[in-house]
Length: 326
Ligand code: CO
Ligand code: CO
Image 1: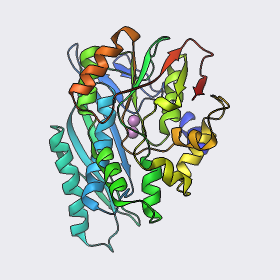
Image 2: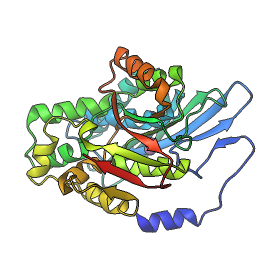
Image 3: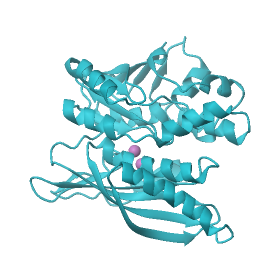
Image 4: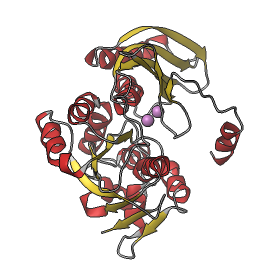
């Protein structure tokens, strides 16, 4: 992935007066002003099967793609299927994936209006999504301010649990809880944060909590403190990690944040891995002014989001540095 980062940084930096959010701060969606009332949010995401149940896979991939619109405080309107599928596999298997995706998009009030399929040795599925937001109300990952509380809206552990499932060691109920967690939309969490008014947000996906927080502190020129014991984990995550379910991505995430982390001595190596676990369709990480934290938490609880946990806060610095205590 380091090589990929180098290739991308060699591309021209796109800027335009109407491009309100581009690639400069590492946001996952672009925001483009059409007029004073409306800006477009534009994003795409897709990945190979995360679970054996194809309908669930489709739903999770769609929820994950829609999430980048929710992280910007927007409303998804239209989507296109992005599909890679092996010719050798039965097409009704693809139908199952797509049905899961359509059901999830319908739940979000987003219309899937077509798409594109290519022959591919390994299946892949996701959506390109267009959403809208009022210009100026978009939430990027670059606005976090010292003193903000950091609020997380889904527990961690989906990387470890899905890896354990591939190894055949994940209990059925543990896997089902992880699947439900990944398939849950970030819709109501996004609505709550927009109603309250927050400084920054990102959704937690492949780079894990620490990787996405690294993007936020770098984009915002701030530091952060995280308390391990305040970070919610899916049931079974710790046990499965102890049994050897360590995703390659999680291991790489831990290495990828090493330059910015200050792990206090009481935080074990296992706990460091837990905070770096590569998530699929994870929750929102919201940076909210401290005087609005209680209002955000009660709105999130009313909306019955999976969790509403204050896991730490934004600091003045050292800029780009993340401290983790027990
Ligand atoms: Co994304
Ligand atoms: Co994202």
